[in-house]
Length: 306
View 1 (cartoon, rainbow, N blue to C red):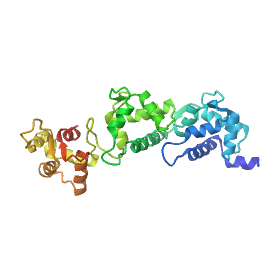
View 2 (cartoon, rainbow, N blue to C red; view 1 turned 30 degrees about the horizontal axis):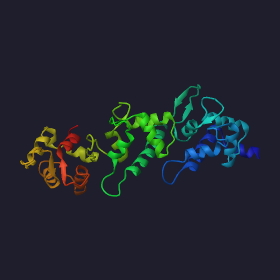
View 3 (cartoon, rainbow, N blue to C red; view 1 turned 180 degrees about the horizontal axis):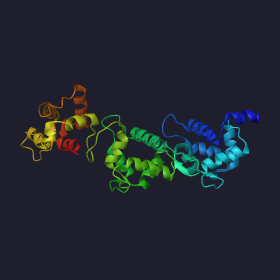
């Protein structure tokens, strides 16, 4: 009965937490982004793009939440912080995946300590989908071509509008604030957009060192740290030593080393680094990602020396 149901929830915040957990379960997809839009449309029975109190109550009943009228009103406020009496899609999406806010005892709003982790969760969702899209059955990931598709005006920077369009096409339905939060996490140089290097970092993910420019190398940060401790690097002679290894005088531009020559360089000129076999293997794969048999050593030096 009524008393039993009330004992199930200590307060409105607990109802909100349980509700968010259930909505996340319902919208979860085995592949691709969450089904937030489709669940919203199921609750929005009259199809006007907004969920009113009666539609929310019916939706909660269907999900097994038997709440009083007062409780439903309070849940509405969790979605509708502007107190308009209805929930639009942005409100709905933000409640499920956005940042929570708590109130201090004095009634003033303060950001919850989990805000960063909520945004990180969104970034990870986007990262996984981009990794899936850029994955190639043969050869390296199609990061450059995907970036060019997202960068609609071809200026080398993915703007907020272009980023939103790409996310929409991928099936994500984020609020404007969520897109702004995600882009802020990705935009390391704070120029207001996402350049190729930042996009590449998003697609590759994981524990990585700093990269070069377009088509740059993605070298494990631990290997980068080791190499930076070598005497050659500390004395500022890395580029000079690399050029001395380039013995092909018949070529106009001395920009590349054979992978085998590069490996010899690491073993001989950077002998104080002492990379393990697995680290050497990872390094060679990183500096020749397309398996061309050549290393553009200038870009390697850029990563190490920056």
